[in-house]
Structures are given as structure tokens and as C-alpha cells.
Picture (tube, rainbow, N blue to C red):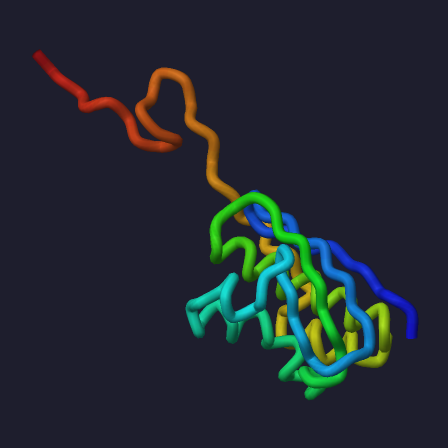
Length: 128
């Protein structure tokens, strides 16, 4: 199997993933997976598509993460991994789609409007 690449995005985070056959080693920005995401919750989010298809020890993953915060990066990485797994085996698409791993979460921060302190917050009204 050659190297498969895919892209995932969430908020301002972008994840580029390169998947090859291997032993299940995940490297993010040239760091160990557990070092980059010390939170067990974020580790769980990233590994969800691999665990669902039971291929966690079958592929080596190298990822470049840029932008956003930890949560956005973890969700972007999950989407990228799911897209790469579909490129490898198209039969897995239905399973990953049903779990929601192939849907890009398009929610982002709403822009600040002029004449207001925040996106929706208005300045305090004074009658007198």
C-alpha cells in the first residue's frame, strides 16, 4: 500500500494526514501522539474512527496540525483520519458516515458587528 493523504478541518484548525501500513504509531507535528494530546478525552476523539473499524494497530499515521485550539485540532484530525480510511477501503464509508465521522462540523465563531461590543451582545440601553 502506498501513502494515502487526506485533509480535515474544524473551526480554524487544519489537519493533513498521511497513512501508511504499519504498527499503529501516530505522530503529530513530529511529536508522539500522547505527548501532543495529553488529555485522554482528546486521544479518545482522535482514535474513534480507527477503533470503530478495528484497525488501530494496522496503520501508521503522520499528521501536520495547524491553527485553532486543541479541541478543534483533535476534531480536524478525526475527520482527516476517517477520510483517509475511506480512501483505503470504500466499503467502510457507510459505517463511518453513520457514526458522523465524515461530516465536517462547520460551526465557527460569529464575527463581531460594528456598533456592538460582541457578535450579538448590545451596549446597555439607558433611557435617561
